[in-house]
Length: 433
Image (tube, rainbow, N blue to C red):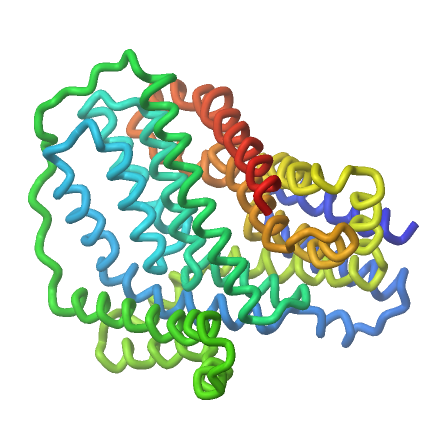
């Protein structure tokens, strides 16, 4: 009975957040308090301790450092240079947009930030070149997602933290996040290619060079920011990846045990402040506070679900009612349906990642397979106009006519195509893993 109440509370929090435009995390905190204290006999202090402090700190520190590259224009200027270099190959423009978005997001901008400054540029290029709006929208959306999933970028950091909360070691979480990144990097290329060569093959793309103005060179502040960003990536990723290659080396194991992405990002943020790479207030304001509140608030409610036995019950139900070979595909479909109306980072992964370890153990499945299927399924439908990605794309349209034209394309073409590709990919991956 208590598990049903908790599940209903999570669904209600999502519905209320969607209908009222109030952060889902705030509703989740309220429900965690009501259910925990008044139905499960927990003390208020125990409820407060459910706030995922480590996840909060890591996301805050990483986003704080990457905020300098956003505030001082480093990432935006880099995107302009990359698009400019592709101006002589207009037929490859969808791939250029995708790879540019991936690179910028992978350098720490995060999914929403990349969409915020790349979507308007992309849709404007579409109107100037005749490229399909839906193709441009998919390219920038899936590129931003893939890049953000990079192990040291925003989504990748969140995935690793959620896996750690689910009981996985840091090395295992990193390895799983590598699998997620590679999977979400490859699938969009397949989807974009299908759209270019099958669904949109009749559209003629002009062979003339694109009219893209020569971007300004990076200034000294932006060059320093870029070097710091690359330096942090090296410090964060090299030790754990080296340990995976040389697991018996005690020196590498010791160094890796002292590496923490949140603390390293904090040090680099201080260095950036001392070098005056950005205004402190603007950098702090660039931290995605809404996302932080959503992830941590939902995390508190998920912790209540764990204490109530809901997670074990769901894992047991899935494990006993669905054939083992079909489970990865099913969890991917569930994630895709959830993502139509909610956030991958704030709702889908915090809700589904905790069931992976017990489910994988009971069915003798590789946990990496389930983690990949959840993220692939969830992000496949993120281009839906009812989801955050689709909403940002619609908001970036240059005029109402384009917006009216794009809405049904996102709903009836992009989202179904992405969903179908995700299902096929998850089925194929299940056979190989």
